[in-house]
Length: 326
Image (cartoon, rainbow, N blue to C red; front, side):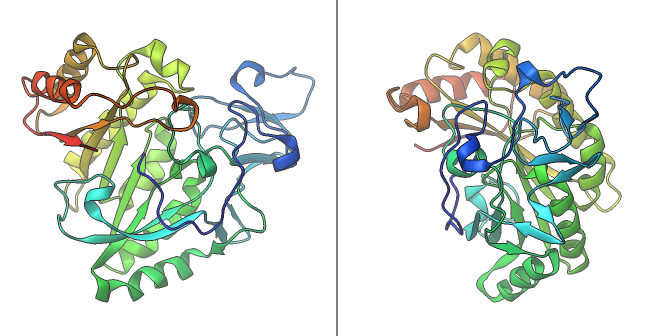
């Protein structure tokens, strides 16, 4: 996940796993308690693998989706208004995308919430927070008009990023449709822990994606509140869809943040690179350097030597391995 741009709204970080009731005023389910008694009227959210079972008025693990009278609604997109946390005109390389329209700029928009709990998140102020009801908001039409107004400054479209944008996929889809109609580009930066039914909705309007492959261990993914199988399925689906896309390929790049003692073993990198190569050895892989963040401020930064060693190993399988944050 890239660092957010100019903040539209500042927030207070929620505790990792359950939202602070005093902050959000809304009950939030966690993975351990999402299966409720059948006697309670509840609806299952199908946006991601968590499959949160929510009673009326309850918010899911992502803090961004609620059961409202039997309908799952995105809290970041109500009454036609998208609730935004950040908006910035960024270099495309910041997403990071190294092989998609290099040298261009893109209007990057952030929302609220995330369906993972990475303790090293650099945008925890927005990713671990329920959408601000009274926060800054733009309709899809207003946001796309803003993007069009920045064409003179080199803007090529919209990038949905900073938090996990697909927890409010309806807003992304509605914006992306208008962006496509305007002849501009849609870029998605995602953790990939998303259901195929959501991908079916957004891939027809997607031009490029950077997907976080945070590690290559099922156990480690569970510690982050994610699921390796779900991410692999999403990457495979996006890649296969891109190859068959009638208007041209969806460009895909992957990013792995190398965290000391978490995902920096040679064995794990070898497995990751081999799996990516089984899809397409030309998929760009960014290996980025960890710096102390949020709940891991006491952990030292990744040694550059470690990053270089893992990159050389990955290059045995992949043709395009790039280093970041060095």
